Length: 358
Image (cartoon, rainbow, N blue to C red; front, side, top):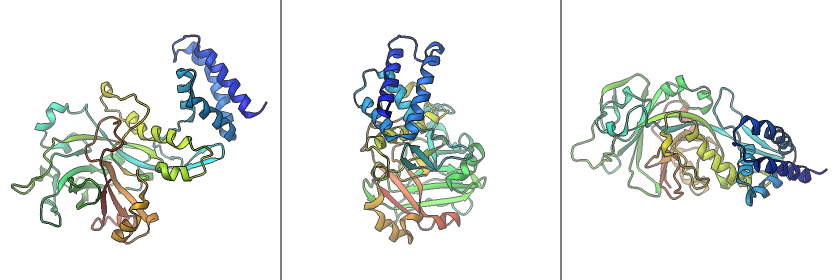
């Protein structure tokens, strides 16, 4: 029996079990389904023909229950643990991964209606978007752009707090004892933009928020608390397709899963607002990992600004300019990315960074 015939036989058996009408996660059903899925997994590990047969079925499934079982077989575990894998394997396909710190929105610790009155977000969370940044010794003046105007405050993140709570944080490659603040001109919708990165040691923040200059026109949105979660990232679809993945249909399926996975890992999300669609996710903000877009358009400008080659560029920050607590079916949402040279990051030197909106 060849691989394709064997996989078709396994899928026929799964369809037969799905048609029994038993609850999907009942022990009676899973005891019968699991042996077939285990055998299918063995085929997927060793032969691209098996992968093609599964992808064929997913293009026009006869049973949505079976389609969900098959998708689960293809979805890798992207959780960040103490020894995260650097590659995913699908038969002959080898796909690289990079760990990242995702900045998930915490809607539970402080209720949204109370955020307007929240003057000291650092007392409630490891980080937050918008609102006011924390004062710190040596950084008590609001950053301004090249034109002298005040920049918008985007995010503050205490990497020390994240490092102490997340196994595998060290693999991300970010400093483990630093607070990062990012200010940017949020009016820019595409291309390089004026910005500033402020950093100071964890625990060295002041007891008051930093206030913008009087009569400045900065973003005045209420603070949005962050619950950091770790997850592995995949290359952009354009780069993923260029890898030896065996089947061009695999990258987009993996991309959707990779974009949604950090939301699933967020322990403080409001589950009543989950979006169950399969396509169109906008990934949440993160620090580290692969860039979300294909950077070839901006490579020359980024290399020139940072004084290094693209292989030495680190994603310090990447996220929507208006972060959401759940996946958003809006691929055109504006994102902002801040890049830094790996050597400067290791030296805790944030004087030269490159930011762009896309």
